Image (cartoon, rainbow, N blue to C red; front, top):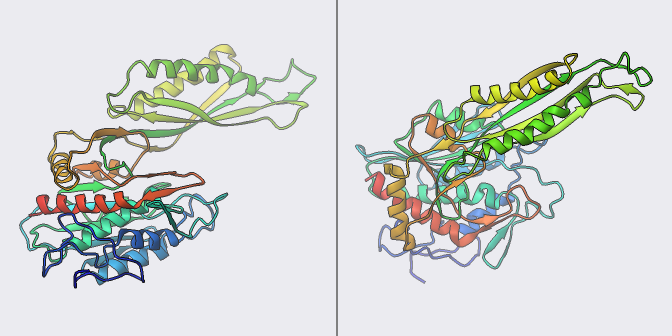
Length: 408
């Protein structure tokens, strides 16, 4: 073992032999606090379930404190963005000497719930995989950001490397929005898990409620009642027809847009005509689609109900909506990251699109050229979730090399 290597909490050191993780004295690859498995295990052990999803859940306060302390101890300038109150996000800057481009490395610290999971916050390692809630989505990516941010301190960069560990991505993304109101950058890598592929596009979504109102009456009086549940039938049939039209215009990386009936509610008892029926719709959108066009589609679905029975009344309510994301695969941030990955990994990462929504849509909308690149694993939102430890190390090395090139 080289003198510059240390053990972390009794674990054997994981030597990271990629450019960017070298001892400032001897230049050899070190494991000084860069043990990806140890860091990821610490993050997974902290319960950070989003309380907007699970009332009374722990939230991000404890993990934010851990991230802030870890980065501060390694020389980064740390700011706590406590907005909304009690849901802190962390911004940590490895300050450059000046005159270079700045790079933001973004990940979210919250997770979905753990109902049905065994030992959700007891990280365990088997065959190079670290199991536990958030190991894949996305504490592995957060760990990679932290490792790369630490490696940037004292690396002789002119530009700043900015680590943002944000709250609430799994619900309304309040954390990244609060951070972007105060901080910017010249480029951004969002480290959602991509299996070390370069993601340049993802879908957006629109949530909506389509309500049909009839008339309540005793079940023996069809002359008085107007059945709202039956009345919504043409709307449900129209969803299939609309999906068929959407599939005729796929995105080259994302495939077609989509919609589905997610929830339905109506009626009060067997002996009554139901006065109302509400179907909740999720519409996944492609880059270039606008909310006005989606609204017209949904209004046309409700028109089908009115055409079938003019006695019905309808209402459309648009809820949460998030824009899709797309960046030119030939843009500088994508090209630099792919070149860095080629240097570290031996080959350029594949260009892909991904289906889930990510905070990349907000960083991009803020005018920051963004690419998504993160480690591998499996089990997002599932009962068994794991992160691939080796890919966390490799991701951190690619981020470090990207910073060396962009922020020089």
